[in-house]
Picture 1 (tube, rainbow, N blue to C red):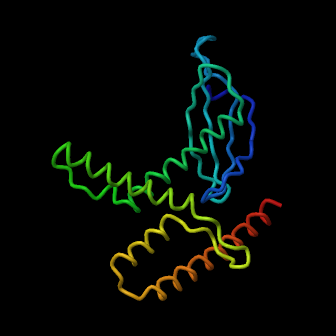
Picture 2: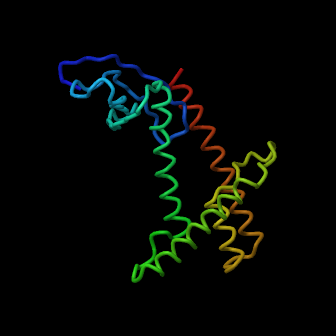
Picture 3: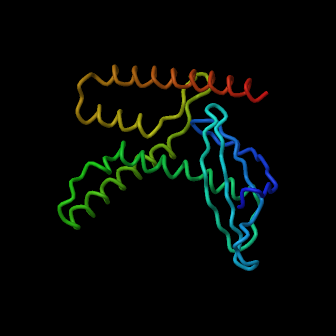
Length: 186
């Protein structure tokens, strides 16, 4: 995109749950050096509402794509980054000292299996009753509970009590955060 080109800017709402509220700004122009049949090239620019910081995404599609689809795909990047971070934190994906290809493959397979196990446990666990005011069990919480059951430092009643307290606190924090976001957006 040339510096003199203004293009058509749009600010679609992503409405995804992210750690920081953002509003993408997307130019609807094709770089001038691209031939007409070379597909669609886009520059997506996301600006943080709180810090004003910009994040840039270069996008390509062989066929025309609606802006909403581009925004949705760019927003999936956060989910992918969270999955990598969770794999490192929950399943010690980054803890192996690679000495041979075989040992690295085994370690990675076990880490992915552990991560998948925790994800399936979260997905299949029914939500708590409405009157309990708890968030759903998370992979982190299931990992803590399993670690406490395997190598108990405290008795199980103590562990369950703190798990419940932590989930109630997180539910209150989420409610407060959503109320504040609604007030800022409204």
